[in-house]
Length: 61
View 1 (cartoon, one colour):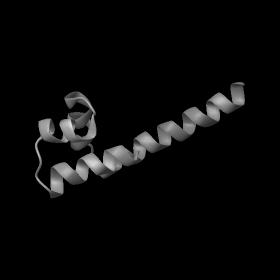
View 2 (tube, helix red, strand yellow):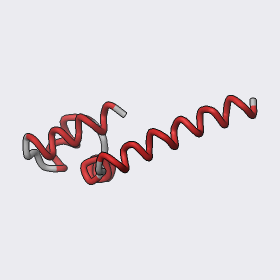
View 3 (cartoon, one colour):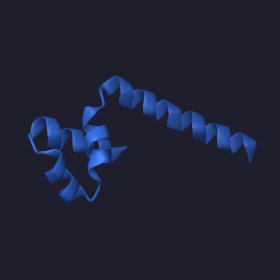
View 4 (cartoon, rainbow, N blue to C red):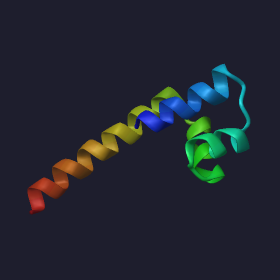
């Protein structure tokens, strides 16, 4: 999750390009593009999905 916040900060606040962020972070451009386009509500939805998946996996094991 931290990489999403870092990418969004670099893109939105510092004005860096997708390519530049990709080179600096080591993530591919598709990941950087996806992360930079996320809104705060969609990040929350991703967190909730991760929590649900963890609970579900713990329950089924």
